[in-house]
Image 1: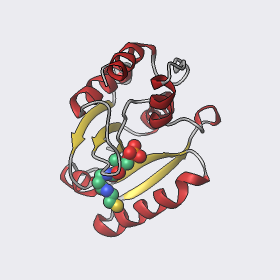
Image 2: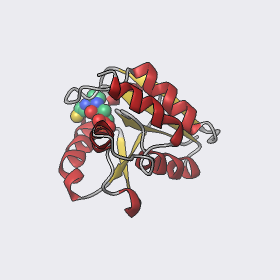
Image 3: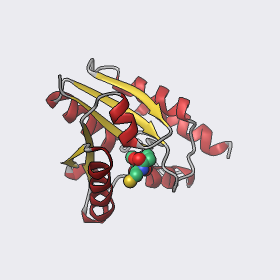
Image 4: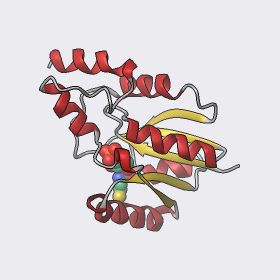
Length: 159
Ligand code: PNS
């Protein structure tokens, strides 16, 4: 069985993430979306809230599950016998950091990384930009699923 993990902060999940998840789910037997801690980011939503949002917007994919982990990604992979990480690459600006992480993950535990190129329609998209636009009252309905719009708005209002 070919099982892969799509890791990230997903704060919140965007159409860019969903595009990669959908494409990965059509190639692999099982895709585990892992909500992880990125120590360089302060999140708007709790891990539980992010898991619930991801579950809601991925429920149509029967081979996609959602989990969380607060340690090293490679330790999660080893513990769950997942040999490969799948990540989206948006642009050359992602490349240095992603390459470095993939090489460290390979060296630490022999876990492979497969990069899928982000669809051009989403190449500029990030959760951080979505939050910034929404915080100034901008329209983010082209960037995140409709069911998440109110949750994002009310969370930003309460901040
Ligand atoms: O969506 P993000 O924030 O770009 O995802 C980055 C993430 C969470 C995948 C990355 O920070 C990560 O793997 N964190 C877990 C800890 C870890 O394994 N760090 C990498 C060691 S090189």
